[in-house]
Length: 378
Image 1: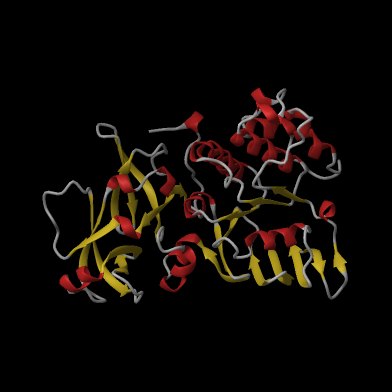
Image 2: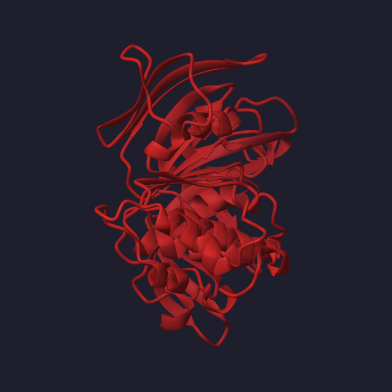
Protein backbone atom coordinates (compact mmCIF):
# COMPACT_ATOMS: atom_id res chain seq x y z
CA UNK A 1 0.00 0.00 0.00
CA UNK A 2 0.99 3.58 -0.69
CA UNK A 3 -0.25 5.79 2.13
CA UNK A 4 0.18 9.57 2.30
CA UNK A 5 -1.39 12.05 4.68
CA UNK A 6 0.58 15.27 4.29
CA UNK A 7 0.26 19.02 4.56
CA UNK A 8 2.66 21.68 3.30
CA UNK A 9 2.74 25.25 2.05
CA UNK A 10 4.89 26.48 -0.82
CA UNK A 11 4.49 30.26 -1.06
CA UNK A 12 0.83 30.95 -1.79
CA UNK A 13 0.08 27.31 -2.59
CA UNK A 14 -1.08 24.92 0.13
CA UNK A 15 -1.31 21.18 -0.22
CA UNK A 16 -3.25 18.97 2.16
CA UNK A 17 -3.59 15.55 0.61
CA UNK A 18 -4.60 12.14 1.87
CA UNK A 19 -4.09 9.07 -0.29
CA UNK A 20 -4.28 5.31 0.26
CA UNK A 21 -4.12 2.79 -2.58
CA UNK A 22 -2.55 -0.51 -3.54
CA UNK A 23 0.90 -0.36 -5.08
CA UNK A 24 0.13 -2.44 -8.15
CA UNK A 25 0.50 -1.48 -11.80
CA UNK A 26 0.37 2.23 -12.58
CA UNK A 27 -1.12 4.77 -10.18
CA UNK A 28 -1.90 7.91 -12.18
CA UNK A 29 -2.07 11.35 -10.57
CA UNK A 30 -4.30 13.45 -12.79
CA UNK A 31 -5.34 17.08 -12.58
CA UNK A 32 -4.95 20.48 -14.11
CA UNK A 33 -1.64 22.33 -13.97
CA UNK A 34 -1.18 23.60 -10.43
CA UNK A 35 -3.31 20.88 -8.84
CA UNK A 36 -0.40 19.71 -6.69
CA UNK A 37 0.61 16.52 -8.53
CA UNK A 38 4.33 17.25 -8.72
CA UNK A 39 4.37 18.63 -5.18
CA UNK A 40 2.88 15.36 -3.93
CA UNK A 41 5.38 13.04 -5.61
CA UNK A 42 8.27 15.34 -4.64
CA UNK A 43 7.25 14.86 -1.01
CA UNK A 44 7.02 11.13 -1.65
CA UNK A 45 10.53 11.17 -3.14
CA UNK A 46 11.95 13.24 -0.28
CA UNK A 47 12.84 16.19 -2.52
CA UNK A 48 10.56 18.47 -0.50
CA UNK A 49 9.48 18.12 3.11
CA UNK A 50 5.89 18.34 4.37
CA UNK A 51 5.20 20.52 7.39
CA UNK A 52 3.36 17.60 8.91
CA UNK A 53 2.10 14.14 8.04
CA UNK A 54 3.12 10.60 7.31
CA UNK A 55 4.25 8.71 4.19
CA UNK A 56 4.69 4.93 3.91
CA UNK A 57 5.23 2.47 1.07
CA UNK A 58 4.34 -1.17 1.68
CA UNK A 59 4.65 -0.66 5.42
CA UNK A 60 8.03 1.13 5.21
CA UNK A 61 7.74 4.56 6.82
CA UNK A 62 9.53 7.21 4.77
CA UNK A 63 8.30 10.26 6.65
CA UNK A 64 6.51 10.76 9.95
CA UNK A 65 6.57 14.23 11.47
CA UNK A 66 5.19 13.01 14.80
CA UNK A 67 8.00 10.44 15.19
CA UNK A 68 10.75 12.56 13.68
CA UNK A 69 11.30 10.22 10.69
CA UNK A 70 12.47 11.79 7.42
CA UNK A 71 14.51 9.42 5.27
CA UNK A 72 16.79 11.15 2.75
CA UNK A 73 15.94 10.59 -0.93
CA UNK A 74 18.79 8.12 -1.46
CA UNK A 75 17.48 5.91 1.37
CA UNK A 76 13.89 5.70 0.13
CA UNK A 77 14.60 3.35 -2.81
CA UNK A 78 12.35 5.31 -5.16
CA UNK A 79 13.28 5.81 -8.80
CA UNK A 80 12.42 9.16 -10.38
CA UNK A 81 11.99 10.05 -14.06
CA UNK A 82 11.55 13.79 -14.66
CA UNK A 83 10.01 15.64 -17.61
CA UNK A 84 13.49 16.00 -19.08
CA UNK A 85 15.99 13.14 -19.01
CA UNK A 86 18.63 14.80 -16.77
CA UNK A 87 21.29 12.44 -18.09
CA UNK A 88 25.00 12.94 -17.45
CA UNK A 89 26.19 14.60 -20.67
CA UNK A 90 29.80 13.43 -20.31
CA UNK A 91 28.79 9.75 -20.02
CA UNK A 92 27.61 7.46 -22.78
CA UNK A 93 24.34 5.58 -22.46
CA UNK A 94 25.98 2.49 -20.96
CA UNK A 95 27.60 4.50 -18.19
CA UNK A 96 24.43 6.50 -17.52
CA UNK A 97 22.57 3.22 -17.05
CA UNK A 98 25.34 1.76 -14.89
CA UNK A 99 25.33 4.77 -12.57
CA UNK A 100 22.23 3.63 -10.70
CA UNK A 101 23.06 -0.07 -11.07
CA UNK A 102 26.41 0.29 -9.25
CA UNK A 103 24.72 1.99 -6.31
CA UNK A 104 22.20 -0.76 -5.63
CA UNK A 105 23.02 -2.83 -2.54
CA UNK A 106 24.12 -6.25 -3.81
CA UNK A 107 21.97 -8.00 -1.20
CA UNK A 108 18.86 -6.50 -2.77
CA UNK A 109 17.10 -8.21 -5.70
CA UNK A 110 17.63 -6.18 -8.84
CA UNK A 111 16.45 -5.81 -12.39
CA UNK A 112 19.30 -7.02 -14.57
CA UNK A 113 21.18 -4.64 -16.86
CA UNK A 114 20.64 -6.72 -20.00
CA UNK A 115 16.94 -7.11 -19.19
CA UNK A 116 16.43 -3.33 -19.03
CA UNK A 117 18.44 -2.79 -22.22
CA UNK A 118 16.24 -5.30 -24.04
CA UNK A 119 12.93 -4.04 -22.63
CA UNK A 120 13.71 -0.44 -23.54
CA UNK A 121 15.37 -1.16 -26.87
CA UNK A 122 18.65 0.50 -25.87
CA UNK A 123 21.17 -1.96 -27.32
CA UNK A 124 22.01 0.26 -30.31
CA UNK A 125 22.40 3.37 -28.15
CA UNK A 126 24.87 2.13 -25.52
CA UNK A 127 27.95 3.80 -27.02
CA UNK A 128 26.27 7.14 -27.74
CA UNK A 129 26.20 10.23 -25.54
CA UNK A 130 23.00 12.11 -24.59
CA UNK A 131 23.79 14.97 -26.99
CA UNK A 132 23.29 12.60 -29.92
CA UNK A 133 19.94 11.19 -28.75
CA UNK A 134 16.39 12.22 -29.61
CA UNK A 135 14.03 13.34 -26.85
CA UNK A 136 12.31 9.95 -26.81
CA UNK A 137 15.63 8.10 -26.63
CA UNK A 138 16.76 10.27 -23.72
CA UNK A 139 13.59 9.46 -21.80
CA UNK A 140 14.05 5.74 -22.39
CA UNK A 141 17.60 5.96 -21.04
CA UNK A 142 16.41 7.97 -18.01
CA UNK A 143 13.77 5.34 -17.40
CA UNK A 144 16.36 2.56 -17.63
CA UNK A 145 18.70 4.34 -15.21
CA UNK A 146 15.89 4.73 -12.67
CA UNK A 147 14.92 1.05 -12.99
CA UNK A 148 18.49 -0.16 -12.53
CA UNK A 149 18.63 1.52 -9.12
CA UNK A 150 16.19 -1.24 -8.06
CA UNK A 151 13.39 1.02 -6.77
CA UNK A 152 10.52 -0.27 -4.66
CA UNK A 153 8.42 2.34 -6.48
CA UNK A 154 9.05 4.26 -9.71
CA UNK A 155 7.96 7.90 -9.93
CA UNK A 156 7.34 9.47 -13.34
CA UNK A 157 6.54 13.19 -13.44
CA UNK A 158 4.93 13.90 -16.82
CA UNK A 159 7.74 12.07 -18.63
CA UNK A 160 6.18 12.73 -22.05
CA UNK A 161 5.27 16.39 -21.57
CA UNK A 162 8.38 17.73 -23.31
CA UNK A 163 8.01 15.43 -26.33
CA UNK A 164 6.10 15.96 -29.56
CA UNK A 165 3.44 13.43 -30.52
CA UNK A 166 5.69 11.17 -32.64
CA UNK A 167 8.20 10.94 -29.76
CA UNK A 168 5.38 10.23 -27.30
CA UNK A 169 4.20 7.37 -29.50
CA UNK A 170 7.79 6.11 -29.49
CA UNK A 171 8.05 6.01 -25.67
CA UNK A 172 4.54 4.86 -24.68
CA UNK A 173 4.95 1.23 -25.86
CA UNK A 174 8.07 0.90 -23.72
CA UNK A 175 6.22 2.14 -20.62
CA UNK A 176 3.47 -0.38 -21.38
CA UNK A 177 6.05 -3.12 -21.73
CA UNK A 178 7.64 -2.29 -18.38
CA UNK A 179 4.24 -2.19 -16.70
CA UNK A 180 3.32 -5.59 -18.07
CA UNK A 181 6.72 -7.25 -17.54
CA UNK A 182 8.30 -5.94 -14.34
CA UNK A 183 6.83 -6.18 -10.87
CA UNK A 184 7.63 -2.54 -10.07
CA UNK A 185 4.68 -0.26 -9.31
CA UNK A 186 4.69 3.17 -10.93
CA UNK A 187 3.28 6.52 -9.79
CA UNK A 188 2.65 8.40 -13.03
CA UNK A 189 1.86 12.12 -13.13
CA UNK A 190 -0.03 13.35 -16.19
CA UNK A 191 -2.61 15.87 -17.38
CA UNK A 192 -3.33 13.78 -20.51
CA UNK A 193 -6.42 11.60 -20.29
CA UNK A 194 -5.22 9.66 -23.34
CA UNK A 195 -2.13 8.57 -21.40
CA UNK A 196 -4.25 7.71 -18.36
CA UNK A 197 -6.58 5.46 -20.38
CA UNK A 198 -3.68 3.75 -22.08
CA UNK A 199 -1.52 3.17 -19.02
CA UNK A 200 -3.21 3.50 -15.64
CA UNK A 201 -4.68 0.93 -13.27
CA UNK A 202 -5.63 3.36 -10.50
CA UNK A 203 -6.66 6.97 -11.02
CA UNK A 204 -6.04 9.68 -8.40
CA UNK A 205 -7.83 12.96 -9.14
CA UNK A 206 -6.27 16.09 -7.65
CA UNK A 207 -7.44 19.69 -7.44
CA UNK A 208 -6.14 22.70 -5.49
CA UNK A 209 -3.68 20.64 -3.47
CA UNK A 210 -6.18 17.97 -2.44
CA UNK A 211 -6.92 14.40 -3.46
CA UNK A 212 -10.56 14.50 -4.54
CA UNK A 213 -11.09 10.87 -5.59
CA UNK A 214 -9.24 7.57 -5.93
CA UNK A 215 -10.48 4.57 -7.90
CA UNK A 216 -10.58 2.67 -11.16
CA UNK A 217 -10.33 4.64 -14.39
CA UNK A 218 -13.71 3.37 -15.62
CA UNK A 219 -15.48 4.27 -12.38
CA UNK A 220 -14.15 7.79 -11.95
CA UNK A 221 -14.56 8.83 -15.59
CA UNK A 222 -18.23 7.76 -15.50
CA UNK A 223 -19.14 10.04 -12.59
CA UNK A 224 -20.97 13.24 -13.45
CA UNK A 225 -19.87 14.96 -10.23
CA UNK A 226 -16.20 14.51 -11.19
CA UNK A 227 -16.61 15.94 -14.68
CA UNK A 228 -14.92 19.26 -13.73
CA UNK A 229 -11.84 17.28 -12.64
CA UNK A 230 -11.62 14.72 -15.42
CA UNK A 231 -11.81 17.49 -18.02
CA UNK A 232 -14.92 18.46 -19.92
CA UNK A 233 -13.55 18.85 -23.45
CA UNK A 234 -11.91 15.42 -23.51
CA UNK A 235 -14.50 13.86 -21.19
CA UNK A 236 -16.08 10.55 -22.04
CA UNK A 237 -16.66 7.00 -20.94
CA UNK A 238 -13.98 4.37 -20.40
CA UNK A 239 -15.29 0.85 -21.05
CA UNK A 240 -13.87 -2.65 -21.06
CA UNK A 241 -14.03 -4.67 -24.25
CA UNK A 242 -12.68 -7.86 -25.79
CA UNK A 243 -11.32 -8.37 -29.28
CA UNK A 244 -13.94 -10.56 -30.97
CA UNK A 245 -13.05 -10.47 -34.68
CA UNK A 246 -10.76 -8.84 -37.22
CA UNK A 247 -12.29 -7.77 -40.52
CA UNK A 248 -9.21 -7.85 -42.75
CA UNK A 249 -11.13 -6.91 -45.89
CA UNK A 250 -11.94 -3.46 -44.47
CA UNK A 251 -9.16 -3.06 -41.88
CA UNK A 252 -11.55 -3.11 -38.92
CA UNK A 253 -11.72 -4.85 -35.55
CA UNK A 254 -14.89 -5.78 -33.69
CA UNK A 255 -14.78 -5.24 -29.93
CA UNK A 256 -17.39 -6.85 -27.69
CA UNK A 257 -18.46 -4.90 -24.58
CA UNK A 258 -21.50 -4.87 -22.31
CA UNK A 259 -23.39 -2.55 -24.65
CA UNK A 260 -22.85 -4.65 -27.80
CA UNK A 261 -20.22 -4.66 -30.54
CA UNK A 262 -18.05 -1.71 -31.52
CA UNK A 263 -16.32 -1.55 -34.89
CA UNK A 264 -13.05 0.37 -34.79
CA UNK A 265 -9.99 0.73 -37.03
CA UNK A 266 -7.83 -2.40 -36.97
CA UNK A 267 -6.36 -3.07 -33.50
CA UNK A 268 -3.10 -5.03 -33.47
CA UNK A 269 -4.14 -7.36 -30.65
CA UNK A 270 -4.83 -11.06 -30.33
CA UNK A 271 -8.36 -12.43 -30.52
CA UNK A 272 -9.73 -12.51 -26.99
CA UNK A 273 -7.42 -9.73 -25.78
CA UNK A 274 -9.13 -7.60 -23.15
CA UNK A 275 -8.84 -3.88 -23.74
CA UNK A 276 -9.97 -0.61 -22.28
CA UNK A 277 -11.18 2.14 -24.59
CA UNK A 278 -12.26 5.72 -24.25
CA UNK A 279 -15.33 6.96 -26.07
CA UNK A 280 -15.41 10.76 -25.96
CA UNK A 281 -18.73 12.43 -25.25
CA UNK A 282 -18.20 14.80 -28.18
CA UNK A 283 -17.95 11.78 -30.53
CA UNK A 284 -21.40 10.43 -29.58
CA UNK A 285 -24.59 11.62 -31.30
CA UNK A 286 -28.14 10.59 -30.39
CA UNK A 287 -31.28 9.54 -32.26
CA UNK A 288 -34.72 8.60 -30.94
CA UNK A 289 -35.22 6.02 -33.71
CA UNK A 290 -32.68 3.71 -35.35
CA UNK A 291 -31.40 5.63 -38.36
CA UNK A 292 -30.84 4.14 -41.79
CA UNK A 293 -28.41 4.91 -44.60
CA UNK A 294 -25.58 6.28 -42.42
CA UNK A 295 -21.81 5.98 -42.74
CA UNK A 296 -21.63 5.57 -38.95
CA UNK A 297 -20.95 1.90 -38.15
CA UNK A 298 -21.77 1.87 -34.43
CA UNK A 299 -25.44 2.29 -33.51
CA UNK A 300 -26.14 1.19 -29.94
CA UNK A 301 -29.51 1.10 -28.12
CA UNK A 302 -29.30 2.99 -24.81
CA UNK A 303 -31.37 4.78 -22.21
CA UNK A 304 -30.79 8.27 -20.91
CA UNK A 305 -29.69 7.97 -17.30
CA UNK A 306 -28.88 11.56 -16.37
CA UNK A 307 -28.69 14.98 -17.99
CA UNK A 308 -26.05 17.48 -16.93
CA UNK A 309 -26.99 20.85 -15.53
CA UNK A 310 -24.04 22.83 -16.89
CA UNK A 311 -24.73 26.27 -18.32
CA UNK A 312 -24.26 27.07 -21.99
CA UNK A 313 -25.49 25.71 -25.32
CA UNK A 314 -24.02 22.20 -24.80
CA UNK A 315 -24.99 19.54 -22.32
CA UNK A 316 -23.60 16.11 -21.39
CA UNK A 317 -25.93 13.13 -21.02
CA UNK A 318 -25.04 9.91 -19.24
CA UNK A 319 -26.35 6.85 -21.08
CA UNK A 320 -26.91 3.27 -19.97
CA UNK A 321 -25.89 0.84 -22.72
CA UNK A 322 -26.99 -2.50 -21.21
CA UNK A 323 -24.94 -1.83 -18.09
CA UNK A 324 -22.07 0.07 -19.68
CA UNK A 325 -21.92 3.81 -19.09
CA UNK A 326 -21.57 6.06 -22.14
CA UNK A 327 -21.68 9.84 -22.47
CA UNK A 328 -23.02 12.03 -25.24
CA UNK A 329 -22.49 15.76 -25.73
CA UNK A 330 -25.23 17.48 -27.69
CA UNK A 331 -26.78 20.93 -27.85
CA UNK A 332 -29.40 21.98 -25.37
CA UNK A 333 -31.73 22.56 -28.33
CA UNK A 334 -31.36 18.89 -29.31
CA UNK A 335 -32.37 17.87 -25.81
CA UNK A 336 -35.58 19.85 -26.25
CA UNK A 337 -36.24 18.82 -29.88
CA UNK A 338 -35.79 15.12 -29.04
CA UNK A 339 -37.78 15.45 -25.80
CA UNK A 340 -34.98 13.79 -23.87
CA UNK A 341 -35.37 13.01 -20.19
CA UNK A 342 -34.03 10.35 -17.80
CA UNK A 343 -35.40 6.98 -18.88
CA UNK A 344 -35.87 7.93 -22.53
CA UNK A 345 -34.77 5.28 -25.05
CA UNK A 346 -32.20 6.50 -27.59
CA UNK A 347 -29.64 5.20 -30.04
CA UNK A 348 -26.01 6.25 -29.54
CA UNK A 349 -24.17 6.86 -32.83
CA UNK A 350 -20.37 6.51 -32.70
CA UNK A 351 -18.08 6.85 -35.71
CA UNK A 352 -15.59 4.01 -35.96
CA UNK A 353 -12.74 6.39 -36.79
CA UNK A 354 -13.37 8.33 -33.57
CA UNK A 355 -11.81 5.45 -31.59
CA UNK A 356 -8.15 5.55 -32.54
CA UNK A 357 -4.95 4.17 -30.99
CA UNK A 358 -4.79 7.01 -28.47
CA UNK A 359 -8.20 5.87 -27.16
CA UNK A 360 -7.11 2.28 -26.47
CA UNK A 361 -5.24 0.62 -23.63
CA UNK A 362 -5.14 -2.74 -21.96
CA UNK A 363 -7.89 -3.66 -19.49
CA UNK A 364 -6.74 -2.80 -15.97
CA UNK A 365 -8.13 -6.05 -14.60
CA UNK A 366 -7.06 -8.37 -17.41
CA UNK A 367 -4.26 -10.87 -17.81
CA UNK A 368 -3.93 -10.29 -21.55
CA UNK A 369 -2.49 -7.16 -23.06
CA UNK A 370 -2.01 -5.45 -26.37
CA UNK A 371 0.47 -7.69 -28.13
CA UNK A 372 3.98 -6.29 -28.55
CA UNK A 373 5.10 -5.61 -32.10
CA UNK A 374 7.18 -8.80 -32.25
CA UNK A 375 4.32 -11.15 -31.36
CA UNK A 376 1.10 -9.71 -32.75
CA UNK A 377 -1.57 -12.13 -33.83
CA UNK A 378 -4.65 -11.85 -35.97
